[in-house]
Structure formats: structure tokens, C-alpha cells
Length: 466
Image 1: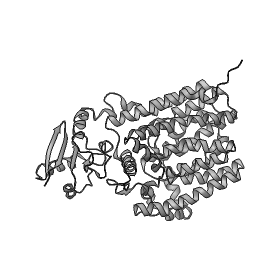
Image 2 (image 1 turned 45 degrees about the vertical axis):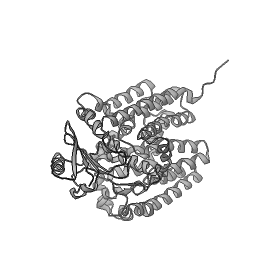
Image 3 (image 1 turned 135 degrees about the horizontal axis):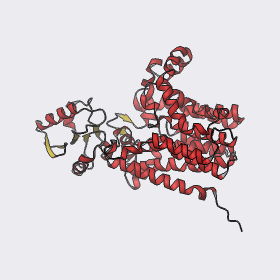
Image 4 (image 1 turned 30 degrees about the vertical axis):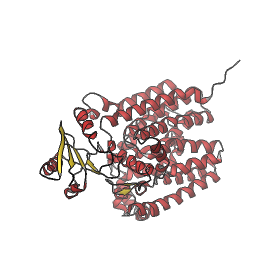
């Protein structure tokens, strides 16, 4: 008798191993003091405050957590912090989201006529796509939760699962305001190229509605200013509305920003990992990714043009869908599963940042101060206010007040802080050794503070009771 093996059982090994590797890698990076205030500390601090029933105003960001990207999904994570307040929930969620995306990829592959071998190959192409590994290492970003949801939304349309589609896009919109643009474009794509008018209209109107509410109401209310990334497109205007208007009225300016060597390099990085599995006839599947591609090309902000940061995440589901369609229609440059897997492995080995864990590399730079930093952290009261370096913030972010020791920090604020923990060897993001030296000297001669820990260029000052 033939034994039926469910699709999940065939790929659960991929999901479990991917989750474990991703979780261990991000946790190790964090424990080696390579996570940062931007962005892990921001989300951890905001979610912690929500879980405590407090106003989620991130003190070092000087912003309510909804004023950042209107990511209301963070409120759904907060109950986990009630059970156990730990930053590791964010590593678990991020690793799980990236790993569980394999499941709808499998279903899409089978639904679109791929063999088991080819479908497993697509799953491996996704797992080995360098951005997936790299973004898992780069702190935490709620838009990673949208990755499996985009796949499930596509699967829902192809399976005629109306409520599955509604649920998927609803939660996608809660991950980051700008994803509304991808939802709108997905709606246009569904209507024109998939003849799915009902699904398409829902996507267009829900995306448009949330984009307006988030950018014109929620973000300004909670931040007192325009959306955070508007400044990256300052040449087009100082508000979302101005930028949209000038996109239409000033095409000549847009072209000058698009046609650059940096953009060519970015596009090469984006497509090289999957290019042997792509067919130009199937590139219409990338239409929903156009907003993300366009925004990344239009700015000169370098993190939006690499395979390290989160800005290319909304492109991945539609890039993988294009791979599936190309393989299903047998129009790819390479058709052999073995060759495609080898190509993916090679690009992963070249572009993935696992090398940061190697001896004498980036993630080990804080190793000689690791013990002294831990000792200093253990001396700090759980609820006290703190000023510290970017890489230490995520280890102390479960409190109401925490400030970032950057070059912009105003020294007159120190008398309002209970503990000041500084790393002279590695001052942290946005800070220089000169600034940290200045702060240390200032504190040594400040009668309100006492140096209670000094070891391996780690300095901890405590405000004395008056």
C-alpha cells in the first residue's frame, strides 16, 4: 500500500533547519554585542513598553513606536513579552517568519505544476538567497513577517481562498506603511495579468486606504513629522504628497537619479542569485515588487542598494514567484535542479555575511570587551535610566528611559541619567572616540557621578544620591 506523505513532511526538514540556523546566528551576533539600537533596540524597547501598559515612546529615538512606520503588528507581539520579557522573542519571530515562508513556496510550486525535485530546488533557492540570511542577522524588522504573508496571499489567489487573501494582506499592511504600495501594485497585477478583478480591487483599495491613513494621519500624529524615509527623497519634496506630485511632474530629475552606476550594481546583486532560473517572459510577476525596486533605485541611501539590509525584502516573494513560473514553463537558462542548486550555493558563499563570524572579522571586534561589558551591565538597576553605546542598547532596552551616546548627544542632559555606560574601544554607531573621551573626562570631574566600573576600556558611571 502506498503511504501518502504530506507536502509539509517533505520539506519540514528545510523549515526546521533554516529556523535553527537563523535563530542561533542572530542570537550569537546579539550576544557578541553586534546588534544595535537602530533597529533592534527601537523595536525591543517599544514592544517592552507596550507589554507593560506604558506609552511606547522610544526615548533615544524620541518617537512613539507607531510614528516610525505605523507598524501596528508590534502590538500583537507584546503579549509574548508579558509571558517573558526578552529580546529573543524577536529573533524567534524573525527566524520563524523567514523559515516558514518555505511552506507556501512549496504549495505554490506544486500548484503551478513543478515536480517535487524542482519545488525543493525553488525552496533551496529561497533559503540560499543571500538577502534572506543577511537580513536575519541585521537586528529585527517587522517587515520580515510580511515575507511569508506575501507568499500566502499569492497562494490564496491561486487557490481561490478569499478569506486567506484578506487575512494575508491585512497583516502585511500592519508590518510597515510602505508595503501598502506593494499591495496596491499587486492589485493592478492581479487584475491585468491574472484576470482576478475581485482580488485586485480589494488589494488596490486596501493598500491605498492604509497608505493614506498611515502616512497622512498616524505617522504625523505619533511623530509630529513626515514618514521617516521622506528625507531620502528630498530632491522631490519635503512630504509624501510633494514627492508623489513631483514624480509625475519632473520625470527628467527622476531619470538622472535612476541611471547611475550604483543602481546598476544593485540590480546585478538583486538578480544574480536567481538569474539562471529566470525567463524574461515571466518578468511580469515582478510588477508587485516595482514600488520597492523603484524606491531603492531612486534614493542615494546606500543601505537600500545592497543585499544586507531589509529594504529589498518586498521584492523576494515576487522574485521567487518568477522563478517558479519560469521553471514551470521550462524557459530557464539552467533547467537541471543540481545545477540550479550549485549556482545558489555559490552565490550564497560569495554574498552571504556568514564570514562576519570568522576569526578577526566584524562580529568578533567586541570580543575583548565582552566580559567587562557583561560585568558592567549586571551592575545597572533594572528600571534605571541609562546612556550607552548603540551596541549595548539592545541589552538594556527593557526600561522607560534609555539614551544613545552619539556625537549629537547634549552633555547638559547627563544629570538626568542614572547610569552611563561607555565603550571607549568601540564607541558605537554615530559616535566617535573623541566624543566618548570628552564624556568620560566630564563625568570624572562631575561630583554627581561615581565611576563604579572600569575595565578593558569599558566605563560605568553611577549617579550619586543627592
